[in-house]
Image (cartoon, rainbow, N blue to C red; front, side, top):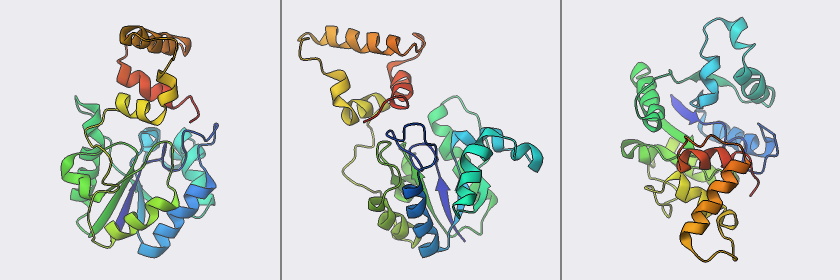
Length: 221
């Protein structure tokens, strides 16, 4: 069996979705991947948390089901399952541990691809197609995903810096947000960034990296 470990936000939508949680153009590319490889879709997104309920009536009443899963089903994408929920001290490692736990529980899986807009652990790199949050699952990612599911492993695309933090990434994707030609001093620029976060009424206790994630969800490219 082949499996597509599918993130949702940043994959079936993008930074320019303007409130749309599912964009048909990305779902169409996902469907091409499913048809080409006969792979099953397993949801890994944090959105699935309130869908990890065995009672189907509760599942069908969840936010994840009604806003993500149901639209995917209506567009012709069957959802085979969800990775288990695992909590650990370092949240960024949870996704990988959940995928590995699922693989352990399903030895029938022969090939798998991880479609994700955050970098995964090094031991899973070769199975990941890294999606830029500003892109969504466009046609440029289709062929690499097919190759991985056919056993041709290799991180794609190779030009990205896997050590890049989310703060660095948001600065790369949206440089105009962090450049004010009237400010010459770096410290003043940094203060200006924090003022911008305050305008979005985000908690001051959160790190710049965490704030960047929140900001990226609220702005257009």
